[in-house]
Amino acid sequence: MRRLLTPLIGTFLVLGVAVGPVSAANSRGSARAVGDSTATAKPKKDDKYVALGSSIASGFGISVQSTGCGRSSRDYGQLVAARYKLDFVDVTCGAAVISHVVDTPQGENPPQITAVTPDTKLITVSVGGNDIVYNGTAVGCGSPANICTGPPDLDAKLASARTALGDMLDQLEAAAPKATIVFVTYPREVPRTGNCPELSFTDDEAEIVRALGEKLEEMFVEVAKRPGIVFVDPYVARGDHTGCAPASQQWTAGNIAEDGFAYHPTALGHQVMAKMIIKALNKK
Image 1 (tube, rainbow, N blue to C red):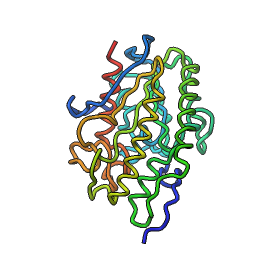
Image 2 (tube, helix red, strand yellow):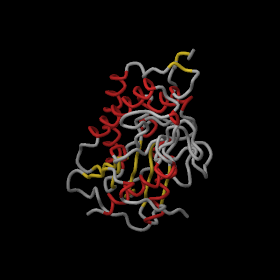
Image 3 (cartoon, rainbow, N blue to C red):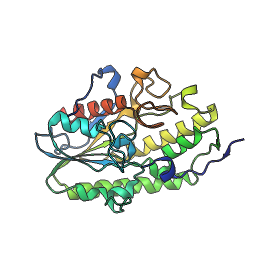
């Protein structure tokens, strides 16, 4: 008998690099910029670049890890910074919620936005899933010891996160008026249809996590509909790149990650996200 799952963000989401060869067909997600501002300005060498967000951005579990927040030397921020030879500041942190970006310390780490200064020219951010207990639910559902349920008060959590993300983007624009802001969604973690043993979900559990991911994606798309934001969306990429796919196609891990963390982007996933970001920034 599985015990009742009580999603806890902090429990389930603990705390010289080049982009590898990823074919265009395998990295075809969506990238768009709204408005005709400097949103798609191509970075220049030594521009200041600040990476913000949760474990989805930090590369949690992927070697080589720094201490504390679980930042990988191969996360997408590192790859983008290396491509353009930027002055890189990585303040991404596992288990971060939106408030940790804007106004709330996370342990000994100050709010991430404090790293953003008026001379910042590029900001990337992936955050919001922990606010609706997305990966916490996935990790809990993947354990046979739990009864899998969606997070309580989901509609209220989505509404709160939607408002908080909009406020976050307002504050980032104010903190760095000349920066290109790139919002990066989460890669898909459950196939559009079906299931597989590698996810360690029953069919009903797979549907719970899939539906939660779809609601998160809808929220991200809605929030990004504003002038000047570059929206990079690996979630809508063609094909299956979840833990059900062959290892050479996995952008997210299943229940067991050889190099990474369960239901999180793999090293290949970070390469793909970096490739998408670079493609968007190279557009004029």
